[in-house]
Length: 222
Image (cartoon, rainbow, N blue to C red; front, side, top):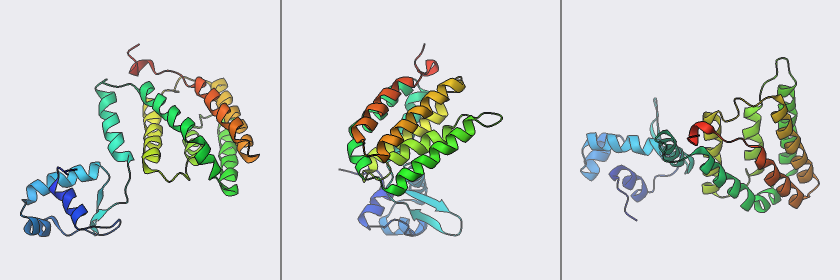
């Protein structure tokens, strides 16, 4: 497959490793015969795709492969132009979590399950505090923790992107205390099922609790 970027092609052809520093644009320009101005434009594309970062005093650094930045950029454009909806992406996320459930939960350690219990405790503390707060951060942590052991950068990237879009959509901004209580009761039951290795029961609860997710009228044109 052709890489339509001299800068990215340079990284691939020279086998630049994650966390390795690249030469300056001036040096790369001299080596491959491409103008610095063109390379600078291509560098910005590579940054958007999460391929490199530019750090003060360190220069341009190759990053470990991450699928999420490219998906986030595409999804953001699709949502902002109303070519896509958040609910469409939400359906993809539900299918991914359901499909990869068995593989993901089989990899969870005792420590991971303890982390899930801690996340649930933190969520209840936020809900029952004075004033009460929606545990959005814990919501993201809970679901990503369940799938954190999967060795699949594409699934990880799509799930990371979903939870970023979920926060940006503010889809639950009008949901009250009772809604969040329902959500976290499900999360608690899912964790109990995982702790007792009742993985099928946990998947059934996961699928059942998807129905709690409200639609986003603003992104559905309704």
